[in-house]
Image (tube, rainbow, N blue to C red):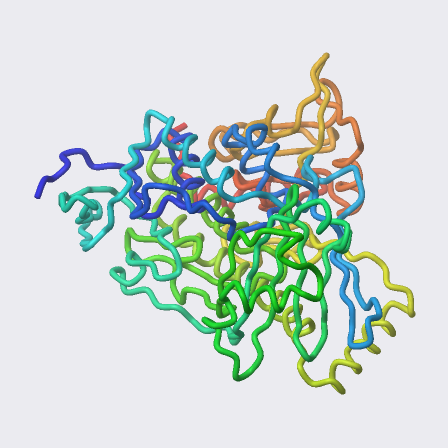
Length: 512
């Protein structure tokens, strides 16, 4: 067994999307980062299919959003059809101007996107990546964590890091070694997931929008992916063998309602149990869990990968603050508080959608349909998918309750001289104090470290009025925005702003 002499700032176990984003962010913060994964290659078939504008904003921070653009397309509306084929709900997206500077909902091709995320992290000088390597044991002491690893050629070694992130999937070794457990949120259904590549003849047969078939005999979903990629999620009925139904022959029988083997090529078919699980605790000393290691949820809003990226983004800036000596270790406790609360709230809403789609009792389904139509006065109106996202409810947030507190802050297009840039390109992704231009900025020693003060107006004028509308809607004049783009709190005058900032002095250890 060999032992590395260097102690890394962070070790990331798992190099899927969550781990790759975590490594890219940590390396971007200048932290020495070790990454390992059992797999040498990215899985060549799609699993995640949907992302949203919050995740694209993170990809922007990583500097990869332009490289990913060729592999994504806007998500179509999702139409929900009831027992008798009537439209009962339509999920859409918000109208332009887009609040975060990107189309709010997209579909994408996971294998090339994951390749790009991996390549970005591997290209950072602060990041060391070892593939074909699994963790076999984990011990902690006052200064760090020791991981014992074994490579696929049998070589073992020990790796030291001050903190460890387990982003190693639903059967997470790190979670088990750290003694962290999963809590059941009460959803467990068997489904078949089918990905196909459809030819021109097949495309002409298929719906032009994504569809939720809320039919008691066999609830199912049809999702329009990028290019000629189409996905079906088809419920497995009681008494059916999940393994048998996932064979090509049985899969084509289920797809015969829409297409035949002459119309498409099977890309992937697999039976799953759609679970709703969340880690009871997200931290054990110097060890954290993220992504599927921390939570699993049904896929009805396509939020699985999004949640993992949110985990990585939330944790990375906090680790950077602690490791750079700017904040105390207690800041890291807010990671689990915030992410578990958000995951649990969103999963509850996803479960409601899943139960709406999956109602098996015909009488109850007809009642559901009638109620949905009654709620909208008989005319189904588009409901933005983004309306389903909850705010952060607890953690590192200002003390004063406000509707904007814990929500995502917009990223408008700003004009500065001859340049037009998204806000983060101009203001960075540290703390930001954004005002409507009418409030004087507090002294630098009252602000979080390296906080950018961004008053609207010259030289930073916005081009679409997104921020002006946001300030008007929330009846405030300033917003303090965290590095992960969530609103710490808002103020309407200078006294409120001073009061908002005061508690942060207990979080940050200011040397100035």
